Image 1 (cartoon, rainbow, N blue to C red):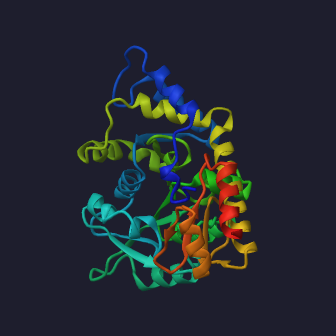
Image 2: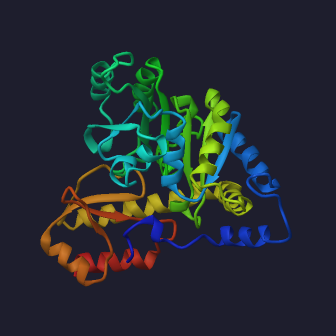
Length: 340
């Protein structure tokens, strides 16, 4: 019963097979290979617009590099206090921007409160020499509490940000989970919702280590700068075809959405089992593949003694994460431990 994280899950067989296929013969390096070109075309079809594309192997690198072209060293990035870029990336955005400041905002269930955003935009002007001007807004969807922003919620944040000429970054480490939860199109949850740069993650949803920085609209003009920063930071992989191969297989026949749907379904069952026991209460809505609950101590002991793996979260809740590979027998074992 490994429900610690979706990064602990195995790689999907289709992606391993794609890697073997990509390993035949030679190919140009640093993104000039045919597979990377095909991936760009495929993503343009999926997002129904022209894009620019950079591939990396980690979400932290993707987020930090993306923000580095949106926020200068003297600027500020607005995000939620629970945002991964604030809590879990060891200052990488500040490091990659050369000194950009993060301003954490609040809001229930790790969603930025539009009123808090409006207050911050008013409090931190763009043209006062003594304060740090906001230059970017970062939103995670799914967010760090496992909740999904609807298109209306996104636009309520990105609209005011763009009026102040802030660049908008979406952390999409679990973008596929948000898509299937909301039943929206990739376009609707990205550039149509005001996103300039999306960090699209496959690593948590079946890949070894495959992340795409997707630039929309005018942000595409920053591709050269992004590539230069990627190279200087040591995150420009020479054999990019192996990242592209994973992502192409992941996207083929909407596998990425099927895997996210499996993970979301397993999380919904985990939430049902835990709450039906009477020994757990949801801390946040379950919109994707993460379940946060407040556990009765007796139930927590039973689960741990049965070998269930989950994390104690800093807010006192317990986090259970389902993945594409969460099995029926694991859910059955969880049910048995709960009811023991």
